[in-house]
Image 1 (cartoon, rainbow, N blue to C red):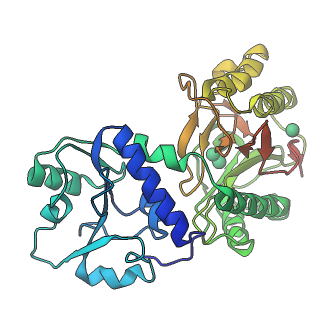
Image 2 (image 1 turned 60 degrees about the vertical axis):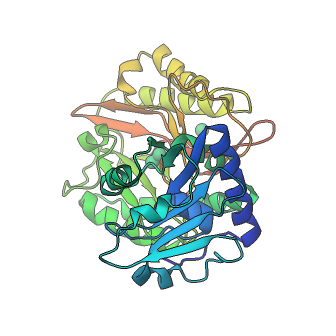
Length: 375
Ligand code: ZN
Ligand code: ZN
Ligand code: ZN
């Protein structure tokens, strides 16, 4: 298990466990079973790392029942200083050869289990065999906690936003004619760490036609004069909170026709979506704000993804800023606003900032200029 510091004290953990019990009760669950990953990190400050050996925090809805931490004995020491005692969590360890699944179920009231979304199928299926209980995804329960960031989380997201802005400030220095995307990407990855991230989680350098593929990584394509280049980068602070920001660069005057007009529409679309953000507005209304500007400009079919995604301990989490999501925004929600335009085989562009919903509006957590950065 990793033991990197998280901005979590015992009282915060305690409060989160109580909130989870309340949310589980409201959702009609007997318990929430949280396996290693960001859900576990959110609750107790460490995310764990075991895969085939079962580790699970079991949080019963019933407030009279203790939460239980099931852990392989050989990995338990790695939990470091998680104050399970103080949190009133009962520890049940097991050794190779034991069947750990009954340890999850022992003493639980009857009813459904909510299992964290990223739990490996090998645990889900064996737990099903052990207990014959209905299992459902815990995502809808956990999102009620994780979607609204508290002050300490917001501070981490502000810091990591500033860190990735400093990297974008350095990108023109790396992005030079004659270098490959992979060479540029390696320099950017090093800068991401130099500016305070724990790791460079992802680096997209999409030059020329590669910019038309939103999830391109890097390749051996050489940067040429006239290229438009999409640079989408991010990673977590040591606390686990992530950055994610995109700017689009031009290596000399763009080779393709129509770039400046399409980029102007994209810039207006991103601004319109950010302007739409405030409490009470729905996620799909924010998506629509960006989309309608691009529609107006005749670019609707070139905007081929949702407008954004929540961000926190995961790079992609709730709330999703997408058509059909009528969830109203609330203060403390953080998500990307990242419309893009893509012209297959030619070029693409995207502008991405993380924003925070405030009491009466919006705060951008990325603040680099939005213009096409001509090098
Ligand atoms: Zn991104
Ligand atoms: Zn993003
Ligand atoms: Zn702008």
